[in-house]
Figure 1 (cartoon, rainbow, N blue to C red):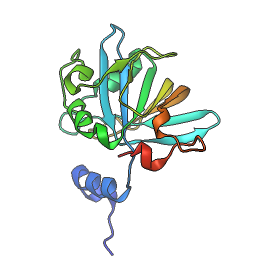
Figure 2 (figure 1 turned 180 degrees about the horizontal axis):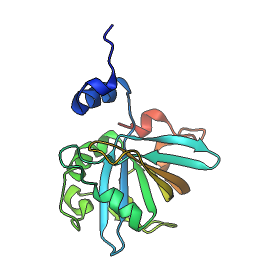
Figure 3 (figure 1 turned 180 degrees about the vertical axis):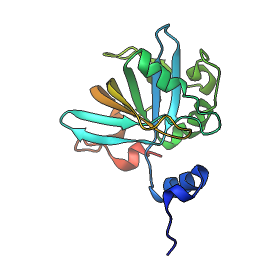
Figure 4 (figure 1 turned 90 degrees about the vertical axis):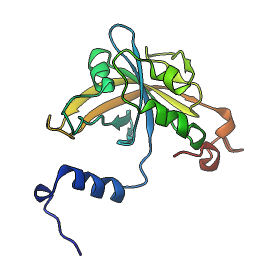
Length: 183
């Protein structure tokens, strides 16, 4: 058995151990908007459900390891505390990958990836039409872990409204895991 003091190895090596041992990890395709109305769309695998009452999801945009800068998603939620967490199915994987590219601020990843933005009901950021489930959320809190390169920022989101594609439902009206086909 290998034993590791996490303070004795590089962040890159620790990242690889952690991300390959905590799996599978769901992916949220997160849409945000800044104070000037610029839309951002980016996937996050540091994401999950944490509470039902109230309904809480958390995702974590990490600081860039190479230069310690923050991602547009994090900057946006600090300006406009609303997000849409869009579920990602296998049919969306290639487009999702295109949305993960680092573009300059103001570049619309919906356009770059070919996803279709659709208006939300309760929040400003648009939803991803191709997503089988979309969660409109208000951001309750952003918790900065350390401010160091590679460190996370927990974005605590309260779900306000949910959109579910009827095609992924079972005969009983539940979400069928085979039909939703999440990555």
